[in-house]
Amino acid sequence: MERVILAFSKDAAADKVRKMLDGSGYEVCAVCHSKAELLRSVTDMDETLIIMGYKLPDAVADEVAEDLREGQKLMSIVRAERQNEIYDQDIFVVTLPVNRQILINSIETFVGIIERRKHRARRTPEEEKIIADAKAYLMENHRMTEDQAHRFIQKRSMDVGARFIDTARQILGI
Image (cartoon, rainbow, N blue to C red; front, side, top):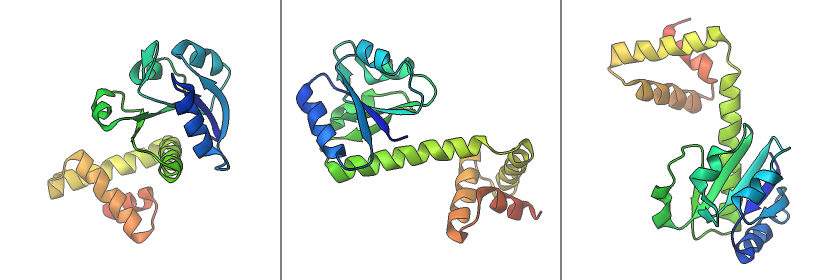
């Protein structure tokens, strides 16, 4: 996902973000000033990152996210006090002030999260069962919640440099 669309109500904000992205490997293919214009621009695009402020003249970030298709992801650059006003968990929020390095790091983090989610979806049903069994084992024998069990497997995997599924197998002794 290297294609980026900017959506800001003010040209100055869009220009500032565009300049930060110059030479970063992310191509700004459109600048939009309203939700309607943005949706027309992304009609034929699949893998697209949309970077916007909190609000366009005709919608806020949550409302924009509702109308995006699969593969179209939204990043919102907002003032800190607006951060809690974005409820959609799929919107990646970056708080102001933002500089070039913060913006590029945020995009790379966001794109990495998307790639990990795609990778998770490629697990076979057998692998999903092994992971579920490993979590169940940790929950029953070590009194963890499902979230704690997941994080335990994840952390152990990172600590030893193993794949998530391999760590789950190790926990089960298979």
